[in-house]
Image (tube, rainbow, N blue to C red; front, side, top):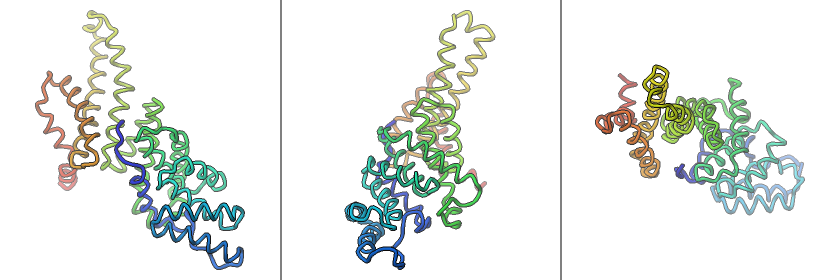
Length: 313
């Protein structure tokens, strides 16, 4: 799959978590005498650089703090902040190494689970799958925490209500992507369908559903059908098998059409748009006597403006 989003842009989705608050990613050093003034100043240099978006300064301040004060009572606040900064600056090996340490101590840190899932997903979309296994573990745990019905640990309830569809959609998409990369297409589709329901604005989700159907169910059915003799293909069993093939193809056509429709106006997604359109035209021709008549009307049906009109009518 082509790279459809760069890592730094994906991790800037951290803005969604501005209300997760200080418990998830640290805060200004509190005014209790549990540490020296020098410790507080060193920690605050990290926190203030993070808050100001000065990421390279935050990296330097965070590493300096942990090197000088590894056992400080402020270290548990500093480490999650540094994980996020590592992810934002594409230092993924450091982000996941430190992230594992933090999550071993605090496995319910939803904010960090979400950040690392996004980081692994963005890397995977760029064909770097080194972090897929961790990403799937973190996405699964985050979804478990979110399934309790209340806002996840460290997440302000009002922010959760505003953002949960986007966040859960991203988590399900990521889980689906990691499973897709493992060729576990059926469970991938389950997650991706949930993602499409939660956030139908992301064309990547529909593209991945189409690809999972193509490489999974369609490939198996097509292989079985192609092995039949001409006589077997005209028998009832052969006709039923072809009907099943065509049914899956129709599902794929819808997914690729949705991908094309949603990504068409986004300049950053033109590689995805062109790839999906190429596949779409091939399968559409197969189902429509080698013509593309009606294809543009089908794509138009799934454009955001058309979907909005249908919802309001």
